[in-house]
Length: 424
Image 1 (cartoon, rainbow, N blue to C red):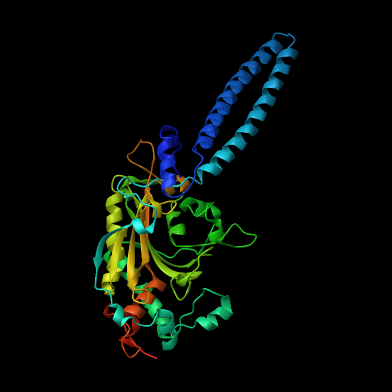
Image 2 (cartoon, rainbow, N blue to C red):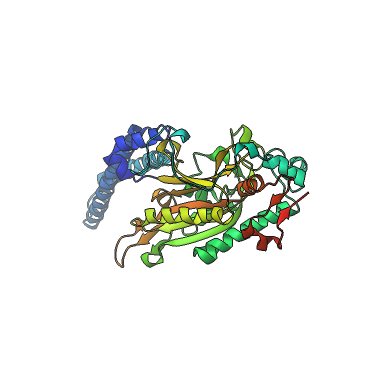
């Protein structure tokens, strides 16, 4: 959520920032509602002061034995007007709040301007992609032939766009989860969290999924509970409503979770195999940072996430998103994209973002800079470290052999009971 003061002081910047993300925002309506809200508050406070004066006057008249009927009648009128103002204020504040929830975050000054993914900037490329002449089977066909992906039976269990791993495939997913968690906790210093997979609407609003993206969420019927689209949601909300001590910052958390996304409107080739599904596994990285150091923390977040790809020896690149490709809540994002030979292209496997104080305002995440000073909002960051299904797809396609087997990356073998090759 943006600071209302910023919208008042620089409405054109807010309009332009929202437009750059392809989102229309009626800043004028927000400003009118804000002015009406402040006017109602001022009138209400004036009348409450008048009510106090009249109440004291009634007491004096009664004490003196004088007729207080007229003064009492005035007090009744004042009370009725205050009630009317309070109801008007509630409606205005509800309308204003509903509009503010839908205002996107503004891009950081270092983010390039552009209309979409074609205008993103490649920062670096690591590893050599497999040549087109050596393109292997796509991971969904290879996984089926190896007997480690069972998509047909899974569709009978849950319908389209769910996946089921078995045998060495299930072991591969579990091995990747353990490798990533060990790396991030033992080497990178994150604290591991095992969060709930169901959260309230307050948590979803806190990170920006609600109200704008309600159709992409799975909701429990009759309950204020949603299946999480990412562990970012519960982890970012761990300290919701708290005031942290500045000495606690930065906080670094990592978590494994299953993730659930309706993916409303998604179509095309990405809906085959493991790339865009309704349920998938992911290891998430979340940071609470001091505003003065949050962009240094973002750079380190990228390094931590890409370390997984380097351990697995997978070709990848780091891409800086332009403002037209930024998410609703992000101020700056780097995507890590892994090479998928069947696509002859790079596909996103992690998005590392700084949200500045956008999520913190929504979730009321604050810290106290020093004893006796007013609390300030923290900056929140997160990134995938990494998406498990897409990592499986990348391993199958990049490590496939001519005989149809898959070489297990060396870093994973200790987690896979020494298995070196996956064969049918």
